[in-house]
Length: 255
Image (cartoon, rainbow, N blue to C red; front, side, top):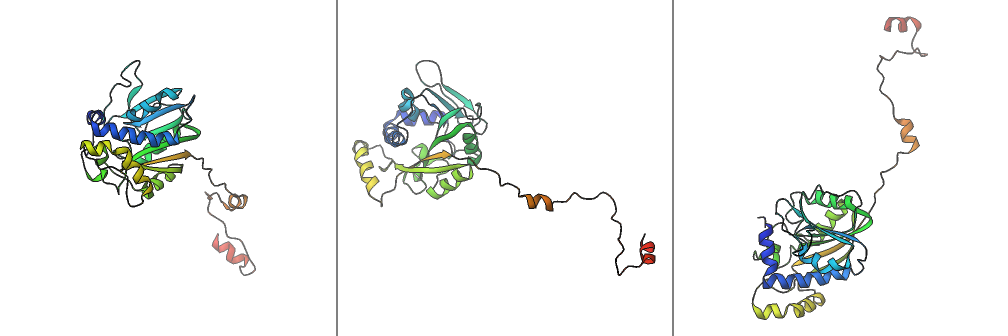
């Protein structure tokens, strides 16, 4: 089941969404505390988290996939959001230093293609942060939030996906250790439960947050001896050659 942009907007406008935004944003800030003069693009529905870092960046863009829809962002001033195909972004190669994926990979038809496109638009050494639903977490099992829809990931699945697209995972976080319930008492204890979850291995967060760096892969060079061994197919019929065991008469008959 896909969640459209109106559902995502309404969730983050509600009490559970506001708590989730605050808790996840803290983990993103741990990775990205040095954003001065850098260009950032968010893909998916990343605006709740882009808002927290917008003032610290040179420029921020919010790209929302066509399958979800688009809303104007930010609410005040010129719009920085656009409706795009997430596997064909309207940016040149190496245009930005950071990419933030949120509510994106879980809903993508081909997550591998989305990551390849993120790799293309990142500058050399650029960094990506992906926020995805944790397959092992409680939030992926209850459908009252966007984390309960789409395709959740385990850490090993996300690692393989990132490496296959040319990224090297550099750091991991988990967030949303509280149950995805709107009871006022649980919402007030959200920060306390996050602290407990980070030090208790038996508690699993509802969201996985990973930072990865763009890597370059060189094609395997062809060794000189391999080039020598290659042959161009002949277009003519090969002619027999006389040997010590082939007489001249036999050779004449073969021709």
